Length: 202
Ligand code: GRF
Image (cartoon, rainbow, N blue to C red; front, side, top):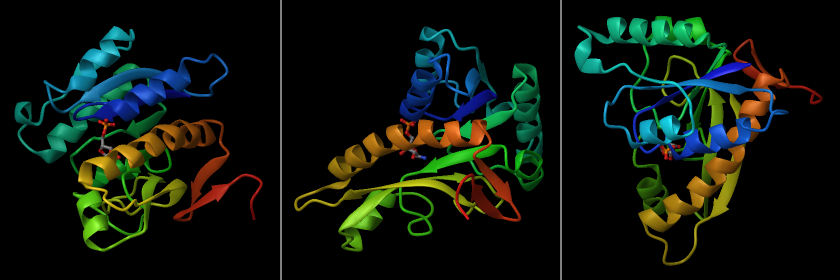
């Protein structure tokens, strides 16, 4: 499946997806990377890996709808069939999300439905959580709310701070995101009636 990745920053999850997809047996091919930030560090990484990139900056468009329409145009230009959000830090408009529903996935650095939104690691520490983790889910119009495809849990260690916990979660992100994209690309994880259906599971 032809897959495009949307980023806003560092792009370490993007890099993990590109690495997994470089295996010819992997069912998704990364056909392009789109960033809303012209200075996203991930753009350089994608270019170095020979992946086509495109900047679709919010400032170049009069409103959110026009911005998402431009992103949709860029996806069409890449011939994308699937979209993976990887640290894309902007909420997408409902028409765009509905158009891609079931074909667009996101990674979130918490065990959803806990800790939607930003600052997940700080909030998990403040809540005294003993485990934390990450979630890959289908994207629906509400933020961090779509049906879950894969999760990984990590322990919260004594003495953890935001940075140490984030690093432990990020490692798990890099493991489950390629796995989840594989499931979606080969049709083993599908979104049906607002739920995830996994092949081989009732
Ligand atoms: C990751 O923690 C991801 O879960 C969150 O933003 C961060 C992006 O990191 N949505 P990177 O750009 O993939 O390195």
